[in-house]
Image (cartoon, rainbow, N blue to C red):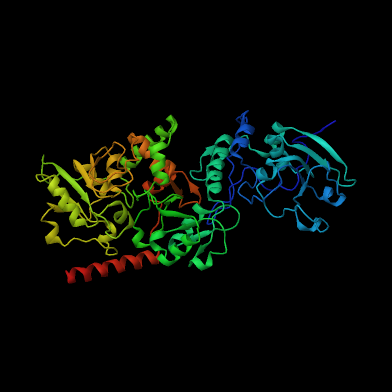
Amino acid sequence: MPVPVTADRPLQATACLPFLRIPPFPGSKIDRFRMPEPDLAEHHLPGDLSDLLRELRVGGSFWAAKPELPESYILVRSHAAIEHSATGNGELPVVFWPESNQSVVKIARNIVTGECDPWHMLSDAEALITDQNGELVLIAAILGVAVHVCDPKTGELRRCAPDITGLLHELVSAAGYLDPFTGKPISARETVQLLGFWRRLIDANRGMAGGLGFAFWKQDNIAALLWGGDGPFEFFRSDADIHERSGPVAVWRSKTPIGALASLEDKGRALIEVEDGFLRSQGLGADCIPPLSITMDRLGAYFDPGRPSELENLLQNGEFDARSLERARHLRQVIVEAGLSKYSRGDEAISRPSGSRRHILVPGQVEDDRSVQLGGCGLTANLDLLVRVRQEAPDAYILYKPHPDVLAGHRKGMIPEEQCVRYADEIVGEESISALIGMVDEVHVNTSLAGFEALMRGKPVTTYGVPFYAGWGLTRDFGPVPSRRNATRTLDELVAAALLSYPRYLDPATGLPCPPEVVVARLIDGEVPDTSLLVAARRLQGKVLRSVRSLVQ
């Protein structure tokens, strides 16, 4: 007769840890969910919570190691069973996973030690033998794995009938938890869904060997977004440091030595392209302000039209449900109303300098940036872009805005003023890109992200290179858009792909990976400090370089 394992029985081993717990992301400032204040309201766990837990595979240390296991086995997580060699059916291999190493001295094989993902450990198990570890019993019951409790004195095994509902009420708060990003109450279901969001991120990162080409001032932010759960994510200085590690290598290609890239590619190592995200920070990367979002692409750089990227495939073949599209629409509305752009915020209104005349904004770019070198398809000079725009719109009032990194004195791409004004009616340096887009009638770009920001604001966009948003029926394109881009997308589908699905975001307040809405809220509220000594020194350096260049010109 099975012995019920219910909530009123003592739970061992994990009783000190909550079942729903926050993964220990590198740099995280929060290590567990806080509980809401008790009240008199009656709370209930949703009836399908166990189904959701099974679907998302969260609860316990779900981020931990996933060791290789037999196809079918008995999992022993019991000191008593190990000591008494009570391993059940001898026809199946036994995997011993002790709480500590002290009890496995005499066991020769199939030993797993350390922290492991309990869902992985139980996924293909035929049975669990335990000292009534409540967390494992719950997961085993959810997965339909038979549970046996071992008598600590005799080693006798007794089949149990776990009470899933009782264990859930014991291990999961029916009153819910506090959202780590907002501090507001969220339900148990919403908490499980947030853990599922983190699980998908962690699982996508598993198996990476490490990173190359990442500046030291970026690493703290990026480590959490590349962390694969089992051990720290390591950044290396050279390819020699990483050759002994298996798995793909994350690279910031523009900062990785060419020789190192060639060496890795010669050895057949898969490279994962990492770049800044499209809502990056409140300040410039060239000023050493770390990014709050990144993109990670296993196929290639999203700005390289020479080959497909994960973003391009998402736009070409992806499906977006109604909830995602509504979320994209709302996020776009918030971004536009707040005047957010990749590096800054500016929602002030700008008057039109030439009345009813057609106004065109031309954003300059960093001329040696990879997005220009690859996506410009031969058009790499800002002056050449201006010439093209003037030829296309001879009667328009053209406003030229130098790229912020160029204007700050850090990067290549400045057009001497006397040459610039031959084709542009006005040079706008300090005005925010958001405010300028709001004022003009059109935006003409090479590959600039300003074109995407203009689309979000409902402005007509003309492209002369091939940015990621070209070729989907939303822009007028003069560049050689690849024929493989033949899908037609709505603006909300573009936003859903580019801001919801593709990038990864880090909350600067908690140090936790987060949805884009959290970063947008932080940027709007000004909760992103950029006052480090390194940033100040870098800005001073930029001023000096600008002064030197003005003298040379």
